[in-house]
Image (cartoon, rainbow, N blue to C red; front, side):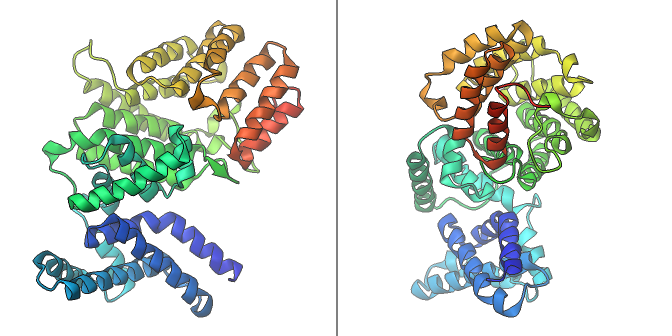
Length: 430
């Protein structure tokens, strides 16, 4: 295939596949079938674009083709079971809104009471008929386009476990005939925690990509932010919705400063804070204030997203790295460890403790995590350890730790950073 066609198709598919699956799922009411018709559209593009040229609107071409495949599927169902009134009704509805041109096709695909098919898809995949871990795994696969391997690394579980969760989740939704729709407002709460986790993990994959040649995937960050804003409109009284929105805005504010000219990572302490997006910081702080105002009684514990947003706010308010209130951050990580305990939270707390009480105190906490199976292949464990060893002057041990981090990471830019730190004898690079 011509490289230009391949690039256009790959770029369009990465950006639009979730919306295409969502639009198809609203019509066929089966996530597995929706994925199949979306893949059929991709195969059709592989056949037609090299011969006919790249369409003027590649996204609309894929959407229209997928909707046509969805229509074909419903026709086959109607033929096989003409007496099924529900199928006939779906077919009639699809024919009624089927677009005769690509512009109308896109408008139809985006038509939704809350303005978003993708949000419908997330709430459908997060139906309470599924266990929470299955909801999140399935939605990350559908919405973020993450592979089972990437999802497994996000959950710190074996890849086979994630694959089984996804297959079983699709079957269970199909068998339960779960409607592709937003739940009533009164029932939002039972799905909201899983939906928030999905949006959070989508953003995280965009913020620091699991693998590939780029350290960031900005399109995923932007999509997660868009969804977080929609959720804040949909559930305006939920403090954790505003907490998540605050966290994403504050994290996203650093985007321009997080990579160098060659796409290489620039860690937080080394970032040019004049490049931070101060409008995003203002939006994040305002969302955090809304979360705090909705948290209830003063004695009520804030949720994990509000706590993480408060940590991000400490960084955002510091005019320089050395002005960061690390004592407050260490305290907040301690609270987060109580509300949402995890090895990664403990690792981050160790970093904050090291900044407050010195690298030896931090290293003691990191070494307590070294034998945890969940962190056995987590590259940031040896990376943090290497940094603390370097600050203690134990450069040979630091080099070994950074080499281990480079070995574990699957992101090319991250590997280059860790290798450079190792080659510098563990010393920080400026």
